[in-house]
Length: 328
Image (cartoon, rainbow, N blue to C red; front, side, top):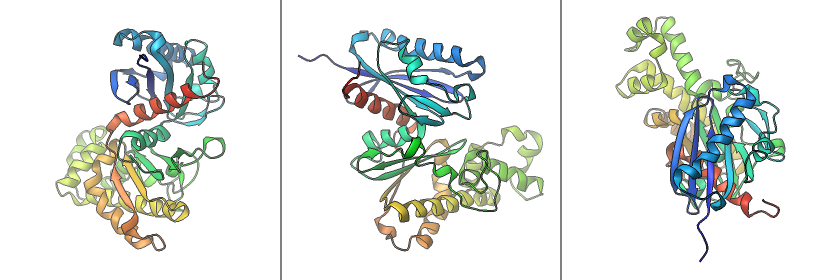
Protein backbone atom coordinates (compact mmCIF):
# COMPACT_ATOMS: atom_id res chain seq x y z
CA UNK A 1 0.00 0.00 0.00
CA UNK A 2 1.43 3.38 -1.05
CA UNK A 3 2.08 5.78 1.78
CA UNK A 4 0.33 9.14 1.78
CA UNK A 5 2.35 12.03 0.35
CA UNK A 6 2.13 15.68 1.40
CA UNK A 7 3.49 19.01 0.20
CA UNK A 8 4.20 22.20 2.13
CA UNK A 9 2.91 25.52 0.80
CA UNK A 10 4.16 28.93 1.91
CA UNK A 11 2.63 32.34 1.21
CA UNK A 12 5.25 35.02 1.85
CA UNK A 13 3.41 38.34 2.02
CA UNK A 14 4.71 41.77 2.86
CA UNK A 15 2.78 41.61 6.16
CA UNK A 16 1.99 37.96 6.91
CA UNK A 17 3.88 34.70 6.44
CA UNK A 18 1.62 31.63 6.13
CA UNK A 19 2.53 27.94 6.06
CA UNK A 20 0.28 25.01 5.20
CA UNK A 21 0.49 21.24 4.79
CA UNK A 22 -1.67 19.79 2.01
CA UNK A 23 -2.43 16.21 1.07
CA UNK A 24 -2.56 14.75 -2.44
CA UNK A 25 -6.18 15.87 -2.87
CA UNK A 26 -5.26 19.49 -2.16
CA UNK A 27 -6.86 19.56 1.29
CA UNK A 28 -5.19 21.76 3.92
CA UNK A 29 -4.53 19.50 6.91
CA UNK A 30 -2.45 21.96 8.93
CA UNK A 31 -1.94 25.71 8.73
CA UNK A 32 -0.18 28.43 10.71
CA UNK A 33 0.81 32.07 10.24
CA UNK A 34 3.07 34.72 11.70
CA UNK A 35 4.21 38.26 10.94
CA UNK A 36 6.68 38.53 8.05
CA UNK A 37 8.86 41.22 9.70
CA UNK A 38 10.95 41.79 6.52
CA UNK A 39 12.94 44.60 8.17
CA UNK A 40 15.05 42.09 10.13
CA UNK A 41 17.19 41.32 7.07
CA UNK A 42 17.46 38.70 4.36
CA UNK A 43 19.43 36.06 6.26
CA UNK A 44 17.05 36.22 9.19
CA UNK A 45 14.04 35.91 6.89
CA UNK A 46 15.51 32.92 5.06
CA UNK A 47 16.26 31.16 8.34
CA UNK A 48 12.74 31.89 9.60
CA UNK A 49 11.30 30.44 6.40
CA UNK A 50 13.40 27.30 6.74
CA UNK A 51 12.53 26.91 10.43
CA UNK A 52 8.83 27.42 9.76
CA UNK A 53 8.83 24.90 6.92
CA UNK A 54 10.70 22.29 8.97
CA UNK A 55 8.25 22.75 11.86
CA UNK A 56 5.14 22.05 9.76
CA UNK A 57 5.41 18.23 9.52
CA UNK A 58 6.45 18.02 13.17
CA UNK A 59 3.39 19.96 14.34
CA UNK A 60 1.10 17.98 12.04
CA UNK A 61 2.55 14.65 13.20
CA UNK A 62 3.80 13.75 9.72
CA UNK A 63 7.17 12.08 9.10
CA UNK A 64 9.60 14.18 7.07
CA UNK A 65 9.96 11.45 4.44
CA UNK A 66 6.25 11.83 3.64
CA UNK A 67 6.89 15.38 2.34
CA UNK A 68 7.39 15.53 -1.43
CA UNK A 69 8.26 19.20 -2.01
CA UNK A 70 7.77 22.83 -0.94
CA UNK A 71 5.96 25.53 -2.93
CA UNK A 72 6.44 29.22 -2.10
CA UNK A 73 4.49 32.27 -3.27
CA UNK A 74 6.34 35.60 -3.57
CA UNK A 75 4.75 39.07 -3.97
CA UNK A 76 6.99 40.10 -6.85
CA UNK A 77 8.73 39.11 -10.06
CA UNK A 78 10.21 35.61 -9.96
CA UNK A 79 12.46 33.59 -12.27
CA UNK A 80 11.34 30.00 -11.76
CA UNK A 81 14.71 28.71 -12.90
CA UNK A 82 16.95 29.08 -10.99
CA UNK A 83 14.53 30.18 -8.24
CA UNK A 84 15.49 33.85 -8.16
CA UNK A 85 13.43 36.70 -6.74
CA UNK A 86 14.01 39.43 -9.33
CA UNK A 87 12.11 42.16 -7.48
CA UNK A 88 9.83 42.12 -4.44
CA UNK A 89 8.68 45.71 -3.72
CA UNK A 90 7.35 44.88 -0.24
CA UNK A 91 10.37 42.72 0.70
CA UNK A 92 13.29 44.50 -0.99
CA UNK A 93 15.89 42.46 0.91
CA UNK A 94 15.07 39.60 -1.47
CA UNK A 95 15.65 41.57 -4.69
CA UNK A 96 17.98 39.61 -6.98
CA UNK A 97 18.33 36.79 -4.45
CA UNK A 98 18.43 33.06 -5.29
CA UNK A 99 15.87 32.18 -2.65
CA UNK A 100 15.05 28.72 -3.99
CA UNK A 101 18.61 27.37 -3.81
CA UNK A 102 19.17 29.08 -0.44
CA UNK A 103 16.18 27.27 1.05
CA UNK A 104 17.09 23.96 -0.59
CA UNK A 105 20.49 24.14 1.13
CA UNK A 106 18.64 24.21 4.47
CA UNK A 107 15.86 21.71 3.70
CA UNK A 108 15.67 18.04 2.67
CA UNK A 109 13.06 18.71 -0.04
CA UNK A 110 12.96 20.43 -3.45
CA UNK A 111 11.67 24.02 -3.38
CA UNK A 112 9.81 25.88 -6.13
CA UNK A 113 8.73 29.51 -6.03
CA UNK A 114 6.45 31.63 -8.16
CA UNK A 115 4.63 34.94 -8.17
CA UNK A 116 1.74 34.96 -5.68
CA UNK A 117 -0.87 36.07 -8.26
CA UNK A 118 0.18 33.19 -10.54
CA UNK A 119 -0.35 30.80 -7.65
CA UNK A 120 -3.72 32.40 -6.88
CA UNK A 121 -5.01 31.60 -10.37
CA UNK A 122 -3.34 28.17 -10.34
CA UNK A 123 -5.15 27.33 -7.10
CA UNK A 124 -8.51 28.58 -8.39
CA UNK A 125 -8.00 26.62 -11.62
CA UNK A 126 -7.35 23.47 -9.59
CA UNK A 127 -9.98 23.50 -6.86
CA UNK A 128 -11.78 26.83 -7.10
CA UNK A 129 -13.85 28.96 -9.44
CA UNK A 130 -11.74 28.00 -12.46
CA UNK A 131 -12.07 24.21 -12.22
CA UNK A 132 -12.35 22.65 -15.66
CA UNK A 133 -11.35 25.86 -17.45
CA UNK A 134 -8.23 25.41 -19.64
CA UNK A 135 -7.97 29.15 -20.38
CA UNK A 136 -8.56 31.79 -17.75
CA UNK A 137 -7.36 35.08 -16.34
CA UNK A 138 -7.10 35.65 -12.60
CA UNK A 139 -6.94 39.14 -11.09
CA UNK A 140 -6.14 39.91 -7.45
CA UNK A 141 -7.31 43.19 -5.95
CA UNK A 142 -5.66 44.37 -2.77
CA UNK A 143 -2.78 46.69 -1.91
CA UNK A 144 -1.95 46.41 -5.62
CA UNK A 145 -3.42 44.60 -8.61
CA UNK A 146 -1.93 41.26 -9.62
CA UNK A 147 -2.66 38.87 -12.44
CA UNK A 148 -2.13 35.29 -13.56
CA UNK A 149 -2.87 33.47 -16.81
CA UNK A 150 -3.69 29.85 -17.52
CA UNK A 151 -3.44 28.99 -21.21
CA UNK A 152 -4.20 25.52 -22.56
CA UNK A 153 -4.23 24.21 -19.00
CA UNK A 154 -0.79 25.54 -18.08
CA UNK A 155 0.44 28.55 -16.14
CA UNK A 156 1.76 31.08 -18.63
CA UNK A 157 4.87 32.91 -17.37
CA UNK A 158 6.12 34.61 -20.53
CA UNK A 159 9.70 35.74 -20.96
CA UNK A 160 11.48 36.08 -17.62
CA UNK A 161 8.28 35.44 -15.66
CA UNK A 162 6.82 38.81 -16.65
CA UNK A 163 3.48 37.65 -18.11
CA UNK A 164 0.07 38.67 -16.76
CA UNK A 165 1.19 41.86 -14.97
CA UNK A 166 -2.26 43.27 -15.67
CA UNK A 167 -1.90 45.74 -12.80
CA UNK A 168 0.64 47.63 -14.91
CA UNK A 169 -1.39 47.70 -18.10
CA UNK A 170 -1.94 51.35 -19.08
CA UNK A 171 -5.60 52.32 -18.76
CA UNK A 172 -5.34 56.12 -18.41
CA UNK A 173 -2.25 57.37 -20.33
CA UNK A 174 -2.15 60.74 -18.57
CA UNK A 175 -3.14 59.38 -15.18
CA UNK A 176 -1.35 59.07 -11.86
CA UNK A 177 2.26 57.89 -11.76
CA UNK A 178 2.35 54.33 -10.48
CA UNK A 179 5.01 53.02 -8.09
CA UNK A 180 6.38 51.04 -11.06
CA UNK A 181 7.23 54.30 -12.86
CA UNK A 182 4.51 54.14 -15.51
CA UNK A 183 1.51 56.48 -15.57
CA UNK A 184 -2.14 55.42 -15.58
CA UNK A 185 -1.63 51.76 -14.62
CA UNK A 186 -4.69 49.69 -13.76
CA UNK A 187 -3.26 49.50 -10.23
CA UNK A 188 -3.65 53.28 -9.82
CA UNK A 189 -7.35 52.95 -10.65
CA UNK A 190 -8.48 49.62 -9.22
CA UNK A 191 -6.36 48.73 -6.17
CA UNK A 192 -7.54 49.29 -2.62
CA UNK A 193 -4.59 51.59 -1.88
CA UNK A 194 -5.13 53.91 -4.79
CA UNK A 195 -8.92 53.93 -4.47
CA UNK A 196 -8.68 55.08 -0.85
CA UNK A 197 -6.12 57.68 -1.97
CA UNK A 198 -8.58 58.95 -4.60
CA UNK A 199 -11.36 59.15 -2.00
CA UNK A 200 -9.17 61.08 0.44
CA UNK A 201 -8.33 63.61 -2.28
CA UNK A 202 -12.04 64.16 -2.99
CA UNK A 203 -12.76 64.65 0.71
CA UNK A 204 -9.93 67.19 0.92
CA UNK A 205 -11.63 69.06 -1.94
CA UNK A 206 -14.81 69.22 0.15
CA UNK A 207 -16.90 66.54 -1.57
CA UNK A 208 -19.92 65.59 0.59
CA UNK A 209 -19.81 62.10 2.10
CA UNK A 210 -20.91 60.20 5.17
CA UNK A 211 -17.19 59.35 5.53
CA UNK A 212 -16.20 63.00 6.04
CA UNK A 213 -16.46 62.92 9.88
CA UNK A 214 -14.22 59.83 10.04
CA UNK A 215 -11.77 61.47 7.64
CA UNK A 216 -11.57 64.59 9.84
CA UNK A 217 -11.20 62.68 13.12
CA UNK A 218 -9.17 59.57 12.19
CA UNK A 219 -8.14 59.55 8.52
CA UNK A 220 -5.97 56.45 9.05
CA UNK A 221 -9.16 54.49 9.78
CA UNK A 222 -10.63 55.29 6.37
CA UNK A 223 -9.88 51.91 4.81
CA UNK A 224 -11.07 50.11 1.69
CA UNK A 225 -13.44 48.12 3.89
CA UNK A 226 -15.00 51.31 5.30
CA UNK A 227 -15.29 52.67 1.76
CA UNK A 228 -17.08 49.52 0.59
CA UNK A 229 -19.46 49.57 3.55
CA UNK A 230 -20.30 53.22 2.87
CA UNK A 231 -21.00 52.44 -0.78
CA UNK A 232 -23.31 49.58 0.21
CA UNK A 233 -25.12 51.99 2.55
CA UNK A 234 -25.72 54.43 -0.32
CA UNK A 235 -22.90 56.96 0.04
CA UNK A 236 -22.62 58.60 -3.39
CA UNK A 237 -18.90 59.42 -3.20
CA UNK A 238 -18.00 55.88 -2.12
CA UNK A 239 -20.18 54.53 -4.92
CA UNK A 240 -18.39 56.80 -7.37
CA UNK A 241 -15.02 55.49 -6.15
CA UNK A 242 -16.03 51.87 -6.70
CA UNK A 243 -17.67 52.58 -10.05
CA UNK A 244 -14.28 53.96 -11.08
CA UNK A 245 -12.73 50.64 -10.07
CA UNK A 246 -15.30 48.73 -12.12
CA UNK A 247 -14.77 50.83 -15.25
CA UNK A 248 -11.00 50.42 -15.10
CA UNK A 249 -11.31 46.66 -14.64
CA UNK A 250 -13.78 46.47 -17.51
CA UNK A 251 -11.34 48.20 -19.86
CA UNK A 252 -8.43 45.97 -18.79
CA UNK A 253 -10.43 42.74 -19.02
CA UNK A 254 -11.78 43.66 -22.46
CA UNK A 255 -8.22 44.29 -23.64
CA UNK A 256 -7.01 40.87 -22.46
CA UNK A 257 -10.08 39.08 -23.84
CA UNK A 258 -9.66 40.71 -27.25
CA UNK A 259 -5.96 39.81 -27.28
CA UNK A 260 -6.18 36.20 -26.10
CA UNK A 261 -9.80 35.13 -26.41
CA UNK A 262 -9.91 34.25 -22.71
CA UNK A 263 -13.45 33.05 -21.84
CA UNK A 264 -13.15 33.03 -18.03
CA UNK A 265 -12.03 35.74 -15.60
CA UNK A 266 -11.77 35.25 -11.84
CA UNK A 267 -11.50 38.15 -9.41
CA UNK A 268 -10.03 37.64 -5.93
CA UNK A 269 -8.15 39.41 -3.17
CA UNK A 270 -9.53 41.32 -0.19
CA UNK A 271 -10.70 44.30 -2.24
CA UNK A 272 -12.75 41.97 -4.47
CA UNK A 273 -15.10 41.68 -1.48
CA UNK A 274 -16.55 44.94 -2.81
CA UNK A 275 -17.82 42.93 -5.80
CA UNK A 276 -21.47 44.00 -5.43
CA UNK A 277 -20.46 47.66 -5.51
CA UNK A 278 -18.12 47.64 -8.53
CA UNK A 279 -19.60 44.87 -10.70
CA UNK A 280 -22.38 47.00 -12.31
CA UNK A 281 -19.84 49.49 -13.71
CA UNK A 282 -17.55 46.63 -14.76
CA UNK A 283 -20.39 44.87 -16.60
CA UNK A 284 -21.42 48.11 -18.31
CA UNK A 285 -17.86 48.73 -19.49
CA UNK A 286 -17.50 45.18 -20.81
CA UNK A 287 -20.75 45.52 -22.74
CA UNK A 288 -19.44 48.72 -24.33
CA UNK A 289 -15.97 47.46 -25.19
CA UNK A 290 -16.30 43.78 -26.09
CA UNK A 291 -16.98 44.07 -29.80
CA UNK A 292 -15.42 40.98 -31.41
CA UNK A 293 -15.82 38.67 -28.42
CA UNK A 294 -19.48 38.08 -27.44
CA UNK A 295 -20.20 39.37 -23.94
CA UNK A 296 -22.43 36.38 -23.22
CA UNK A 297 -19.46 34.06 -23.90
CA UNK A 298 -17.38 35.64 -21.12
CA UNK A 299 -17.68 34.09 -17.66
CA UNK A 300 -16.86 36.54 -14.88
CA UNK A 301 -16.62 34.92 -11.45
CA UNK A 302 -15.56 35.78 -7.90
CA UNK A 303 -12.79 33.59 -6.48
CA UNK A 304 -14.06 30.77 -4.28
CA UNK A 305 -11.01 29.71 -2.24
CA UNK A 306 -10.51 32.96 -0.33
CA UNK A 307 -7.00 33.47 1.02
CA UNK A 308 -6.29 29.74 0.59
CA UNK A 309 -6.05 30.06 -3.21
CA UNK A 310 -2.35 30.94 -3.20
CA UNK A 311 -1.55 28.10 -0.80
CA UNK A 312 -3.45 25.60 -2.94
CA UNK A 313 -1.66 26.91 -6.04
CA UNK A 314 1.75 26.68 -4.36
CA UNK A 315 1.00 23.12 -3.27
CA UNK A 316 -0.07 22.17 -6.79
CA UNK A 317 3.14 23.61 -8.22
CA UNK A 318 5.20 21.79 -5.60
CA UNK A 319 3.44 18.53 -6.43
CA UNK A 320 4.29 18.99 -10.11
CA UNK A 321 7.93 19.69 -9.30
CA UNK A 322 8.20 16.62 -7.08
CA UNK A 323 7.14 14.47 -10.03
CA UNK A 324 9.60 16.06 -12.45
CA UNK A 325 12.74 14.13 -13.48
CA UNK A 326 15.68 15.04 -11.26
CA UNK A 327 13.60 16.15 -8.25
CA UNK A 328 15.33 15.10 -5.06
